[in-house]
Image 1 (cartoon, rainbow, N blue to C red):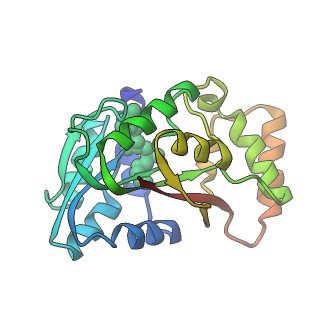
Image 2: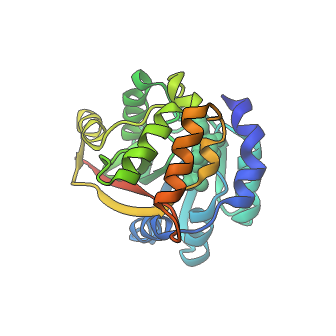
Length: 235
Ligand SMILES: C[S@@+](CC[C@H](N)C(=O)[O-])C[C@H]1O[C@@H](n2cnc3c(N)ncnc32)[C@H](O)[C@@H]1O
């Protein structure tokens, strides 16, 4: 898996742009003006760099499995974030170390049976009263024909079909957060531009037809997908 992320890291960082969902995650995490924050799967470090520019008393820790992502995050945050090469399942931090944890589209990159273990690991490293802010895609049930079609295509992607990644529904996420001792409220939903590149491995005739249909359904508009933001508090 590390090799997969290493291969993607530079391209991902160059193309990662700010959207409304980043803005909302930034607002939520900016409640913390001091203390220790952990971002799991920090990637390019986009949110970290904005927070660190504004809140000088925050100690922002970022973990990732990819050295190249960490290098990019180090540059973007002007070396102000404390970075660790670590798998989200085995975090190198003591229990109850953090006031808040942010994870954005990272912890679905585990097989289904491992995701609850990762959530427990995150909950362990949170202080009592601390918050986990989890931002995930493909969790909200599709409502419109174009959302249904995008979900069908998403499930056919190789990493989904092989089980290397798994996208729980909002209810499943909420169950797992609750089992890890976190109190979770109804998720917020925010639209984000839909990146068609993620369907690049779908080249069979049926998928090609469905992709063209999806493009048509969005004709003249920016294709979007619905993101879910879970705000979870450790009791
Ligand atoms: C889709 S990217 C998201 C990056 C960043 N959170 C963002 O919103 O731009 C997923 C990130 O999770 C990292 N990642 C994947 N598997 C991981 C694991 N097992 N432990 C920690 N990080 C992981 C990847 O290297 C990558 O940086």
